[in-house]
Amino acid sequence: MWTIKRGNIWWYGFRFAGRDIRESSKSTSKTIAKKAAEQRYRELVESFNGLESRDQRVRRLEEMSEEYLESFKLRNPRSVKFVSGCLAHLNRLLGLDMVITINQARVEWYQNTRKKQGAANKTINEEVGLLLRILRDQGDVLRAKMKRAGTLKWRVRNNIGKALSHEQQSILIDAADSSLSAPFRLAVVMALNTGCRDNEMKSLQWHQLNLEKLILTVEKSKTDAGQGRTIPINSALLESILGHREWYLKRFAMIQPEDYVFPFGRDRHYDKTRPVTTFKTAWQNLKERTGIAVRWHDLRHTVGTNLAESGATDETIMAIMGHVSRRMLTHYSHIRTEMKRKAMESIQTKRSVLRAVAGEKTMGAKC
Image 1 (cartoon, one colour):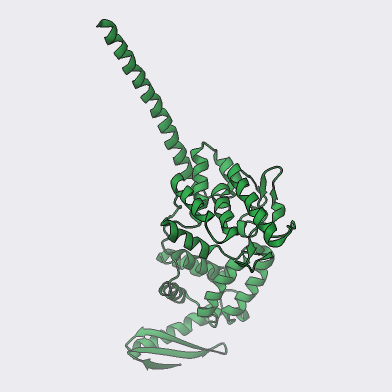
Image 2 (cartoon, rainbow, N blue to C red):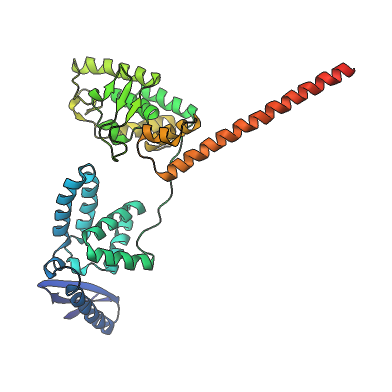
């Protein structure tokens, strides 16, 4: 066991289970650093002889992360990309740590570090949640401790989204019509007329568009409720699809059922056998041209709002848009309540007008 001073802070270290442990005491006192080292050593010994097998406890996080990802791929292949992204950050900062050394202080250090790196609170919460699942029994213990301490999750804003006005929708569609990206023109119209998620649109293939029955089928979705749902193609979307098909045939000469509706690439370098990866650049340019500051996901929220204002039931909204959170459905219910309130007020307004007209007729008769 040793101590060493780095700047004004004393660090301690020792050998445990064949691995070197080096940690900061966060103190300017050498005596406190020695006591911290002894206490930390006791914690590791107790933990080593506690949960799970000893061999598992001295493994590095990166090893357990790899095993977790392989298992996850079999259970939930649709979310592999998201989980891989979380694991990349976990392994970058904690990958070389032995599982037994990851305690509450270490997890909180990870949270603070990711925040300094610019990660959103929601992202940090998701990464920490994944970390605790990988740690299994030890993760359950840490979760309970951090929950009691109030440090398990960071506050996340309840941002349910912004619905565009009908004028804003028209401005975006008109501006998209002048875009140099032919696929992007259809993307904007489709987003505002189907409520499809970004990834659902990017993975769309031509066989999913039935132009005879006017049905769009979503095959790949982030949720089970969204997968396999059908969405009616309205007249505005049909017109845009037909225009896009003409461009597609001029560009590729023919359309195969497995070709992607939104092909990879841009300008003269399109590849219809691969899906587009992002609409980000075109969307950013469109927002700058129109001056409308909204997120791409707000187009989906706008569709839900429009459906609610039309009087659609929760079941209809969920059937068209796939899974919608209970919080979102509550918001749409509020919209319907306001519509009902306006309808009831219109009855009173009409009644008042009729009374006023009747009063004028009575006054005229007396005269």
